[in-house]
Image (cartoon, rainbow, N blue to C red; front, top):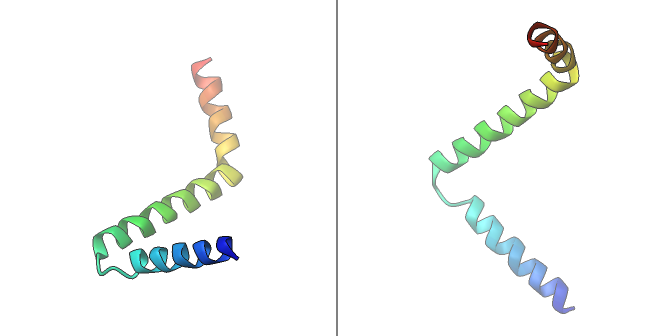
Length: 59
């Protein structure tokens, strides 16, 4: 019961933080998410091949 109340309060605070009208922070958050997503995709597809090529070049 106490944990549920604390979690609800935390969710309310987080929602308030997310709905603050600060477009710069939201833009930066979206930008970071996009970069992380692109990095994940790159690692899944061409990251291994590219790192292998770089390793062969510098080895």
